[in-house]
Image (cartoon, rainbow, N blue to C red; front, top):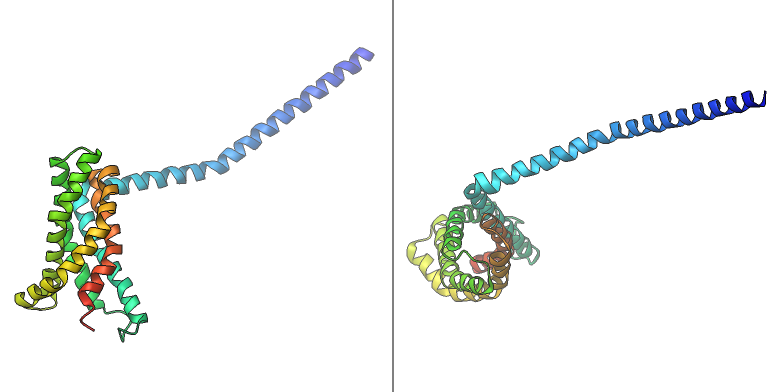
Length: 225
């Protein structure tokens, strides 16, 4: 009799234990079912991000560099216009014609930056301190003056200025813009040349240019109010 009762208890415990195992199993299955959509979403998001990087920075790098160059130049000008408006230098908050001119010139200068950095990395492919120093010197002696001159002539053409007027503006403003350039760009370019690969250089420079363009926009337009 006692043995039968004991066996009954054993069977009951086994059933209860098996039931608990089944409940835990189904509970985990339910959690996995709830988690799977999130996992799929994360996988899809990561896959979309990788495809975006592949599309913009591998297959269409020139397009990306050109559009971001114009876009960030326009944003820099918008910031400068906001400053001018709050300083009561502008009667209207934004001059969209001026923004369009900045965007156009920036976009046209994008290929210049693109091919310059591709060529520079071929000529000086290393990323050691000595090579980075050489790249910064090349940047300040050749790329920066060329960029400044192209900017003022390009803006002058869009403003329907004569070549002589644009040249006179460059003669008057170049030294101030170039001094600002030499103060701003060397540390920025050290990060660019030492840490970044070729395909990300112009995008990084365009972001930095957005900050510098606030100063550049001021130098271009301060005498036009």
